[in-house]
Length: 293
Image (spheres, rainbow, N blue to C red):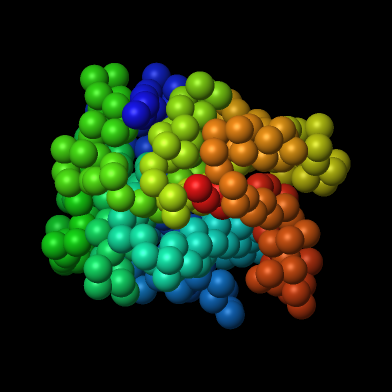
C-alpha cells in the first residue's frame, strides 16, 4: 500500500520552524470563540492552546479584522471547514469507524475534547511542528488522553503509512482523515499520493479536505480577496501551489476508488450553515469535500 506524502512539496513543514500558517489558523479559530455569535464551531480549547504571544496578537488585531469583511469571511470559512470535518467524522463513527487521522494537525484540539470513547486519534505532522504543539499543550495544562497518538513524520525519510503504523495505526481497519488547510500548499503528486493511500484502506474509510479552486473560476470580488490571501501566505514562505477544478477532481477520486463524494461550493456551504446569514458572514468561495470508500 502506497503512502508517500513527501515534505518537499509542503512548505508548511520546514525543519527548524513551526508553520506560520498553522499558527494564524489557530488564532482565527480562537478569535471566532470571542468575536462571533452565534458560534459556527465551538472549541473551548482554542484560546487556551495559544501562546501568550499569539493571544496578545489576537487582542491587538481583533477589532481591525472584525471591521474588515475579508478578514471576517476568511475566519468564518476556517471554522466552517473544521465543523464540516468533525460532522463528517461523527457520521463515520456512527458507521463503525474507530480511527481518526488529522493530517497537518497544527494546533487542532479535537483529540483533547474527543467525545467518542472508542475513537483512537492520530495527529500527523513534521517533528518540529509536533514538538511545538506538545510544548503548547504542556504550557496550557491540556492533558493528552490515552486515545491520542502523535505521529511525527519527516517525509524526507519516511512515508505516511510507516509513520502511522509506527504508533499503532491499523491499515486493515477503516479510518477517517481530516486534511484541512494543507492541499493548496502541496504539489499535485504529493496530494494525490495521500488520497490514494486513503482510497486503498478498507470500506467505510474516508477523508474530508478543502482545496483551492482555479483563480479563473472566481468572481472579480473573489479574485481580489484571493490575491490578498495568496500574497500574504507567499510572504510567509508558504505559497499556494495546487488548484483543482471540481469536476475533474471528482472524476479522479472516483477512479481511485472513492464511491461516495460530497463536494460543497460556496452556495452549498451557505445553504447548509448560513441560510439566513448576512453578506459579511458568508464564507469565502472554496471547495469542501468529503470522499468515502
